[in-house]
Length: 306
Image (cartoon, rainbow, N blue to C red; front, side):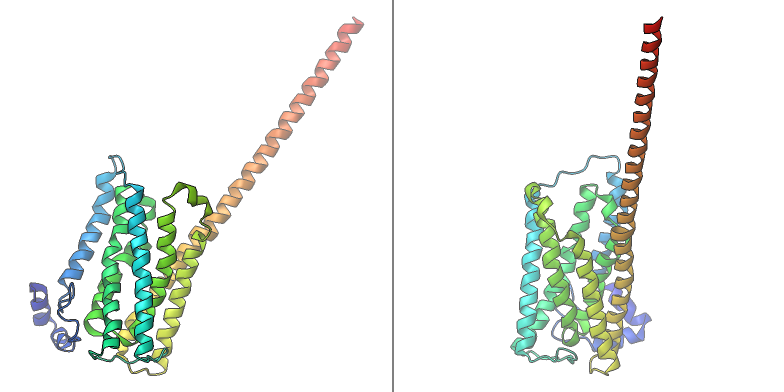
């Protein structure tokens, strides 16, 4: 236990009571320890780098991150995502999960623990993914560090600390499966895009945000269904996950509209304006040439008769 835990227990009696309800299977696991300090510290370090990193790099040359490092990093996350999808799928199948409403089963059964273990890997992967932003800062790709990007990365670690401390199983399986499946495609794109000869052949970039939006809708519907049907799963957990999906839907929809609709329309408009400008310039050039030719002919005829 740390000073924060002691302070929270003294100031918030409900927190002290909540700790007594924490899942006994995960309370001593790495970065959990029934203590928010590790997750909060990592999130604060991340926010510090996001805030002061661009200022530090502003008047400095971008770091050259070798392509092979970026490739290995992204492909490692692809492999981890595939592993998590497979492990959760096998675990819920062997544990005979109800796919629409699965209660929390605090059991050390081998198959149930398979699900809980892989959910910890999912939680830990959110810390690994902080490197996405660190690479952006080091390479001075500041335009990629949007509010959506920072909010999503910094909050997921905290939310999944809560999940892993109190509700690491049951209904919580659904989001990680879909999110990991999307990450297979997303990190595969990022990994392959560092190879110059492949960049023009990667056709699915514009669909990645659509995949993300689709997963948020599915997770929200899955969670909302559990709420309205009275699924025997901690209600506060359902509201937390469902509410977070609403926030993600709003932010990602706004990003999609700005990135793929507004910006695309602006590009088309500028392209059309440029085309019209060129057309006008060509017409003016043709008119000027014709006028000049006519004058030359007239001058030639006059001189001939003189």
